[in-house]
Figure 1 (cartoon, rainbow, N blue to C red):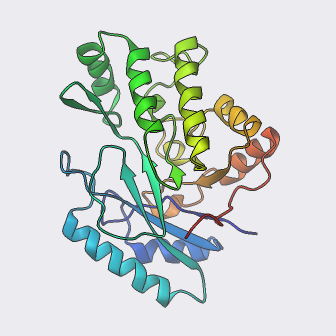
Figure 2 (cartoon, rainbow, N blue to C red; figure 1 turned 90 degrees about the vertical axis):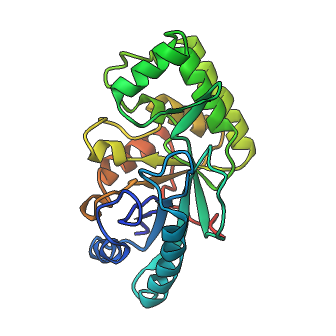
Length: 260
């Protein structure tokens, strides 16, 4: 069975295992492929991403490991590039286009920094209106370029129980659907990301089930990824995610034909 993950982080950025440790775990789990997606450089926040020097080392090491393990597993060299990043120095096999920050005037606001940060951002920069915050987030998502749309509704990470955003609220739905239309026109693949489940933030993958149903209606393509930061979680919640996607009507969860 074809199975793998194209969203894997290592010690080059905020992951806990080396690339080779992840490859060995993937082989043990009988993956047919693994794709690395180190966080690309952002000059406005260097806490979680690869530095320019580390990215050059990462690019070289993944290429070396791909050759070393070519008879056991297919190894891809990818990058997770933030929507506000302008640094692009290497030719990767694929790009995951993700949004971890949005602009509010001259300020850059963090999406993935915790619930307190999110609530303060809504209060201080969006007049206490969570839907204005969500609208700006999804506008930023829609403006991305790349091969894979990373964790489409990351904005809901700290909203267990839908206490900040009501997914049935018309403004929220309109913001999501507008982004979907633009991204589908770009022929991007949407990842179904189990990483937040592995880290205990959510009990479902990104994006939400109703969004996946919309994607199926509109002919969208999906691929299951683990957004893995620890090698043991490379296939976290894969079986239940496969069942959920099958129920919606998807039949191909690991199509990597789009990779250059």
